[in-house]
Image (cartoon, rainbow, N blue to C red; front, side, top):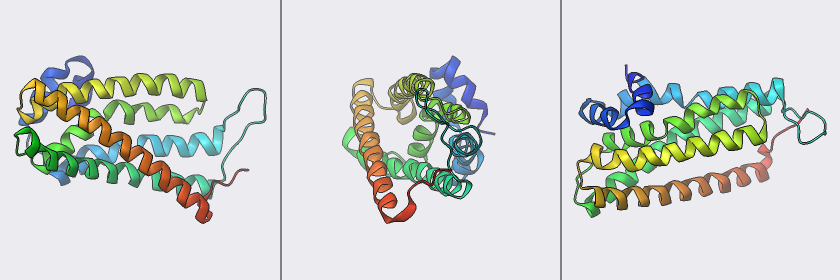
Length: 199
């Protein structure tokens, strides 16, 4: 099972990337054996955190979402993660030619899936939605995700470090564009009547 690489990424990322590169992993296998599991952590945690625990700002009242609203948000969140991984993987495949590498789509899926592991794992904190805690730990996870991206690109795609740095920087920019696009879609859906319902 591909979950075996998760812990190696935290303790010996270079060796983990080499093993991931050499592992035969089709897009379907990457999704079914790893991504659909790890991508579900944040939506499920967020569902329970926002409906059962709730959150509080300052000394204000505890705020919770209705079950129906939280479930809809969790489902959309889950599919947004799965779709974003595939979209960024297509961008990797397209950009590979610019950096002198013919990158199969499955390799792009592997990179984004495994580099995104810290961000997806930190989603467990949504069980207890405390803004400052989620922000601090989320920033640490984001930092390690970027590190994994920069260290993994040259190894996974077998390109020189200087080209790997440029490709990784381009991927960070694409990730930011994807995030802004998702935020725009969120505002669009909220305007069309899918705004969160509080209880």
